[in-house]
Image (tube, rainbow over all chains, first blue to last red; front, side, top):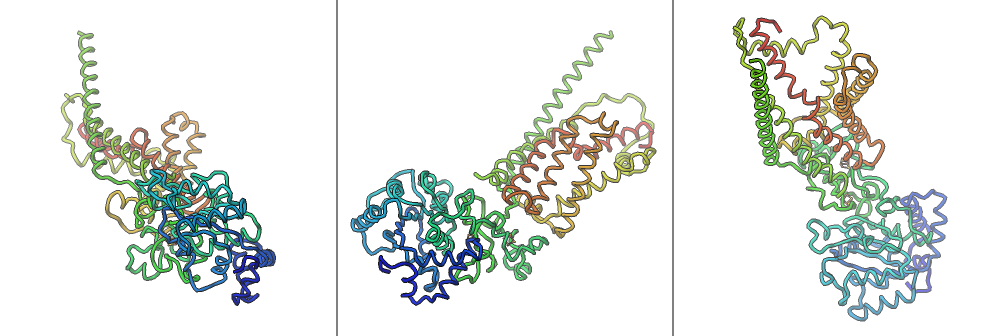
Length: 356
Length: 217
Ligand code: SF4
Ligand code: SF4
């Protein structure tokens, strides 16, 4: 896409029909919970949008988020929207390397000062700057430096949004999230491990359309996508309501498609759009293929106990400790009974002495 | 740590430790209480039958004041039954017990459990209101009674809300539900809730002692 082209022109050169584009706009508008009347506005704004400069920083991450977004499926309008941004720096995707790459970052920052979008995936290690560096620059320094001139920061994936897997106990690198460090910029957390591709394009589309960031929940996630739990929209919910649970992954309940709560499904406490948007071009999502939700879009999802432990089960249960407690109780009981007897005997003696 | 993690982890751990220590402490203490030697001649030899008899007769509603206390009897039985059904036969509860005990049992359909939870809650609230207004009950009630009743109401109420997803996010409702049960665990050994461990042994003891005196319990 040429720099002077707007998004509408670019999409036309890619063979996207007006109809296909409008379809995308109305899907995006409905995903973002906008009224149908906003579709025209979305379409107009998107078609005339200039390519925003995007700098993408990858810190302690597995590249799964980038994989999710770029290899989601065959070129769709979503992926073209993604192509249509001016991705000026992304060290996994860009051709340049070493100093050339860093120069590109600095050039983009200078040229678009105050206007570029900063996308971050991966968490930032505070334990030791040497744990993760790019071109000899620590993740912390690079984040602070690049965030300074950004219009907004999008933390893509649970690692960037909440610390994610690198932060899992015992957090060996001292990993923190973007919002733990950057406090003076609007931050949109697009959590998920990985996040759903259309959620990130939805956030971009919102930014391109309105020039603002979408409405966010208390964890900084767009409410349009993270406003409801997986459980709220799960097609297995009627079985949950009736108390019909699969007890194992291959019992009759599992075959009948009953609720996976007993098998550790975290859907009731996980806010994400999987149950409605689904994965792989809307093909399915984990619960659809018989596995419970892991709760990957939630802070600390790795440390809420086993993925297969039901939410209503305790995270603690040590028979030894409880036996110890019983022994301590018995000792206390014996002690207090002895003390009571001693007091009683003393009182008897005293009253006998008084009466004699 | 989230509130739910706290409720499922450390709060559960410490409340259970207090519950178990407290219950055993009080039971052992009570069992070892000394009674002065009874020097009188026994009317007859009393034993198991007298003890069990007393447990049975004192659990049956038929006695002199029946007409006046029928309300308490009926509500008392209904409440305990509804509570047991709710606590022991709700699927997610069984999962909780399984995580502690290592074994499980079949659950009842949610509809039945929800109904019994609602019945238990309604009865308890009615009894609480009655306790606070009835001239005699008011006189014989102390803080222990009110705390014990309220600590039983809270888990029922929060449990129904969590099940129905009313009034907040599920994780918050579930955490509050768990914390309310944990508050009950902590209070349990030290207040009147301990009757659940003491009632039958006490009746048994009364039965054998009456038997010795030749009285039919
Ligand atoms: S499978 Fe999971 S998300 Fe679906 S109803 Fe059951 S507990 Fe809820
Ligand atoms: S279903 Fe749950 S674990 Fe799976 S991607 Fe969605 S939020 Fe994450």
